[in-house]
Structures are given as structure tokens and as C-alpha cells.
Amino acid sequence: MQLNSDAPANVAGLNPNRTESIVITTPALNAVISSAVKVSGFSDSTFEQTLIVEVRGQSNNQLGRVTTTVAAAPGQRGAFSVDVPFQSFGNQPGRIVVYTISPRDGKTVHLNSVEVRLDP
Image 1 (cartoon, rainbow, N blue to C red):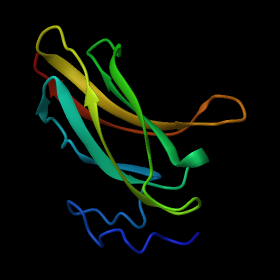
Image 2 (image 1 turned 30 degrees about the vertical axis):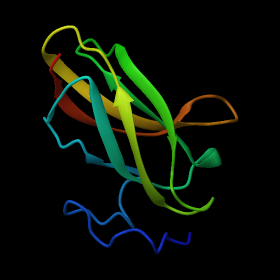
Image 3 (image 1 turned 45 degrees about the vertical axis):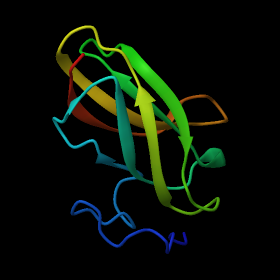
Image 4 (image 1 turned 180 degrees about the vertical axis):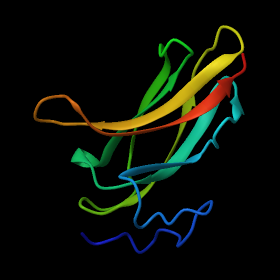
């Protein structure tokens, strides 16, 4: 697999060129977020370079969801960044979830998440 040479060598202490299939660099673990959150990171190549990004609440309920693309040529690892609007009904623990879906059977292929604090 050829790596995206435009990716920075090191982001937040992580090497984006070789690690998990999906790496979330922002928001940070336990960050307090409200109304909309910028979610950024790096991902291996996906079907049509598409990722799904969700904000989930304390009960794992979906509070916000957007799709975004990996900024790299097909077959290459690259960066992603997207704003995810959401509405939280009370201060609660939450989670940012980034994943890909198989075009063949609709199942989750890769998933990574980070715990956050939701502040309405």
C-alpha cells in the first residue's frame, strides 16, 4: 500500500502513516464539546474514500451524524476533517465514532472512537 506523502509526519504524537485503520486526532479524549464538533484524523483507504462520523450520547443514542471523505487518492491513506452538528439534552458522557461500511453486506468494516463530555 502506498502512503499519502502529503500527510504530516507526526500529529499529536501519533504517526498517521502507520497505526490503526482509523485514527481520531481531534477532539481529544475527555474533551468537552457542545452544539458542533470538529472531528479530524487519518484513515486507510475506504470504499469511495467515505467515512461515517457520529456523536453518540450516554445511552449510545445517535445525536449527530455526517459522512465525509478521506482526502487522498483511492487506495491511499489520508486525512479527514468534518464538523458534526448535534444536540445534547443535558451534560452527559458521550462518544465520537468514526467508521466505514462494507458495500458488499452493509456491515461495519473499521471503527474507532473517543470518549468525550457533551455539554448542551
